[in-house]
Image (cartoon, rainbow over all chains, first blue to last red):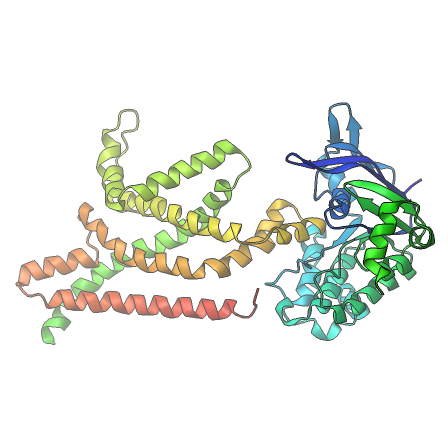
Length: 254
Length: 217
């Protein structure tokens, strides 16, 4: 059974159709990179999976459970409890980090387990500290996010998502807001998750990283999946002219 | 000096009434203001419009008119005909009025928090209520501290409006002393008392601001 199934997803904002029938099917443990020009709908596609956007048409299933089911009158979403359970399997990391500025790093990690799972601080603290150690920021546990560099913020955001023990991690341009010299530390953290066989979908503009980390690459343009394949297929032998043009504009000049 | 000491007990008895109105209004209108702000941002149009109308009326008419209406107007209204005591009537008017002002301040504060904060909380599994309580409102407090402080100081002086119900607050006691003794010293003493209260309030607000300065956004 496929872990992630997104079938024929359509999504409009007002008059503009952002997604025009995108599909993606992945097994557990698979790492998918989604690349493509700005405005191609990559982020929206990812956000639909964790219900940050509601789709107009199409079907989404996670581990076989229906999140949204296509019907002749549009997609019908599961009830609130089911949505919560399905989305609880997914962790999300944003371009803008979205850390909670009024809490220390450690509290950022502990608030969701406390509020959502009703666990006590004492109960969750060891786990939160372990995650901070994994991203190399245990020493920063008592500072507020504003004191961190961009790269550190993003690593905290990753740790915060991991404390909820997600089975699937979604990354929405995790390094796009970072200074170039800070992207490395974040990419390394994601790379390590891939080695631990975490199921992941990563929307990124880092072509080298997209190729290295993933076992499957989607190239999106104008709200459609223009090409899909293994990293070697997409990067070495792109079939479509649009893919070739995009790749040469992203890496060609080097 | 002897004269000032002799009128002080009278003025201070008025200050107690002023203080009661002030503290009760703050304690009741702040939470009510938060609630109204959340309703003002409701997804349901009916709720949104109802609260907007309420705020419009409360901010668009003088507080004194509201006090008079609740005390003198309601008993005459067919079908309602309730007569509140003067203190209760004043409290209802003050809380209703200040909650409307606070609601608008909180609404602005809530809307100033970026969408990313809601999304960050949502993907961690929090409900709307949990997000509001643990993520949004704590950040709103810091942002609205200055305007709320302003309103608080205004309220301290607005309490003097209760003289229209012949309630013996600091201002009315002062006037009665002046009229009794044909001596305006009481006005100065009252001014100093008001200034002292404002001073304490300002210090309190500064302390709160310092407390919230531990984090930046």
